[in-house]
Each structure stands twice: as structure tokens, then as C-alpha cells.
Image 1 (cartoon, rainbow, N blue to C red):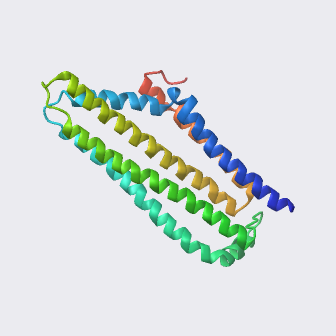
Image 2: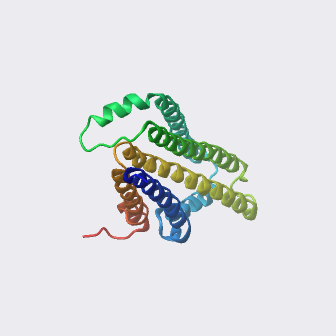
Image 3: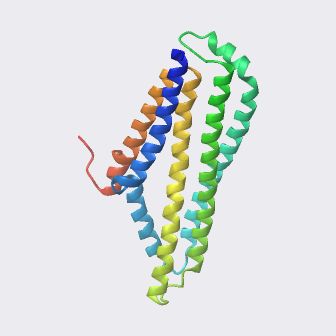
Length: 229
């Protein structure tokens, strides 16, 4: 097996292992320590406050803003998929341009097609996550509307509010996974240059995600922890 072909296999294997492995850890075993868990608690508090309000315009406005963000990323993902499909037919020209650059190993036309297909899969995955996020926010807004008026039976109000909170939490989780796909798509772009660079950027993305979700200033601000000196 050629050494370059072996490096491509190792780089792809590392990419898949890092993506699925990090998702398993961040969304599973370590989730209780993540910024997503802290925000889930705030979403629950938000919906419990919502049920006490007579007018819930502010709540529906917040959900509408979240929907707009999900819609933006979903449409961007579709445009990216379309551009990548067009790039499948430009393999030879692109390889010729990259091959003229120093320290660049663009590979063969077959490997080019595989790399583009990988990006298509990643961006399609992101689209499905963002599209589902949009629908979940829609469900959440319906539940806000279905929450009994303030002063009604507290048990019914609380039950519906907690359902709305749960749907909002699920929407945030899918949105986060869609954004995570974008991070890994950026790492996959490095594969067009060299498999070693692909492995390095994949590990760097893991580092960035870990820092943002478990050791960021935002997390310390949300939990009330003091800033590191």
C-alpha cells in the first residue's frame, strides 16, 4: 500500500473517531459539566417564568430569533452542498492548481472526489440538524401558546411549561450538533492540501470545541465562577 494512501486512511479514520468520540463524550458522560447543561437549566427557568406572564410577546420573540438563526444555517448548508456538487466536476483543474503549490499533496482525482463527498455528507448532516432545530422551535412556540394563562391551575401551567422547556433544550442540542458539523467541515478542508494537515486540524478542532464547551469564559460567566487570574 502506498504511503500516501495509508496516510489518507489514517487521517479519515482519525476524523471519524474524533467526531463520533467527541459527540459521545460531550453529549453523554461529560454533558453535566458542559455549557449546554447550564443553558438547559436557564431554558427551564425561562419557561417557568414564561408561565407567570400575562403577555408572552417577549418569549415568542426570543423563539422567533432562534428560528431565524437555524433557518440561516440551514439555507447556508444547502448552498454549500450545491457548491460542493459542482466542485465534483472540477477535480482535475483543482488538482493542477494545488499541485503547483509547495508542500501540497492534492492526491488523485479519485481521492479528490472522495474528499468532496465527505464534505457533502458533513454539510448535509448539518442541514438536517438545523432544519430539525427550526421545527423544534416551532413546536416550542406552540407550547408557549398552549400554556394556560397566568393564574390558572399551577399544575397544568407547570406541566406545559416544562414540556416547552424540554423541546427548547432539544432544539439547542441539535443546533449545537449542526454547528459542530461546521467545525469539522473546516477541518476536512485541510485534507485537500495534505492528510497530515487534515489530522492536525481535526485535533485542533477537538481542542477548540472542548475549550468552548467545558472551559470557556462564557461558561464561567454563566455559572458565576470568577475569572482566572
